[in-house]
Length: 283
Image (cartoon, rainbow, N blue to C red; front, side, top):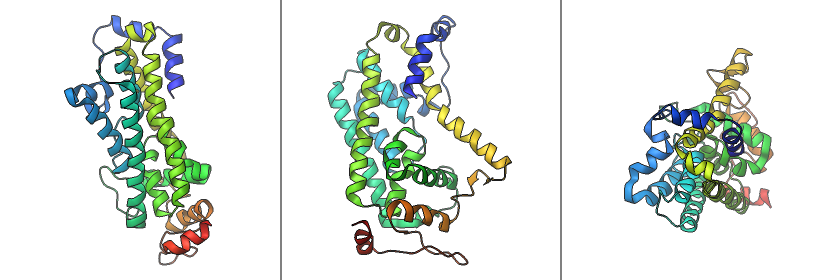
């Protein structure tokens, strides 16, 4: 995603044209505009940035600018617009990303399927759970790493790992790698690119571009959902391959070695396994 951003910036003159046209409009609500969000924190910018990363990854609130926030924070530090030490920022972002996933895992482990069987609300949609199981089905345990770079999925993947009782040592290993690649890697990419004169002179236009590119995965997923719905593969945006407990249990059994999704009347193939049995299965 970030590679696409850099190539787009380097190969086109869109940023220069945007600057020449005057002030640039924000895309979406202010809390989705990474630069505005950071500026709103004022002298507490460091605390605010770290808190946003923790909330998005650990408290089941996916509607926050994850990728663009990290890249923008790194770029603003390089511009001296943020008076922060880049290594302190990276360390704290790593801890926030790692701890956030740990909390989400515990939520899934302790509350179990109750978390994923909630009715749709303003901020909780069952279709995001379907998407998370689709990623586990495709990538297995590596989803914990891959999900870091996918909006919505990065919020629910650690919860799904907890629900499915993924072996804790495996989860921690994936979590460390994911937190480093995402929390530290994306921030440093913004910092290093921020030292290039082109980016330094056109930071406002590039930040708008970053926000736009960061929402492309969401647009792409909506487009895929629309296509699947027309083909009868989804119902109200939900993937029919993963929208039933028995289907989620099949993924859990394949990825985690056992199923923790509780049985539902009229459906077979699910089983509830206690923690001791889960550990024995993993070993």
